Amino acid sequence: MWDVVIAIGNLILLPSLLPTLLDGRSYVPRITSGFAVIGLSFIVVGLIGEGFVISPVLTSTAAVLWAFIFLFRGQPISD
Image 1 (cartoon, rainbow, N blue to C red):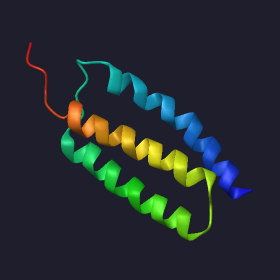
Image 2: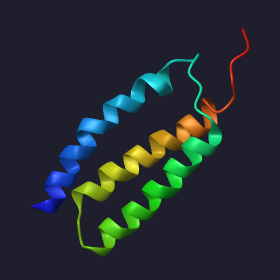
Image 3: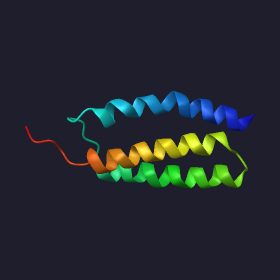
């Protein structure tokens, strides 16, 4: 049951990352997105360790989106 609850929470949060990722003018400092990737990675390991199946996949998706934000939105855009 908790796997489904965590998965639903991730499904609600995932779309909020898409505007940042898709907007070329967006900027997120690399320290912020880097910590998000590291933190989510630890959460994924914990979820897998607890035997959950669905929520680690969705949390990994969030970590991948944050990694793309780290790679492509980590530099300020000069006007």
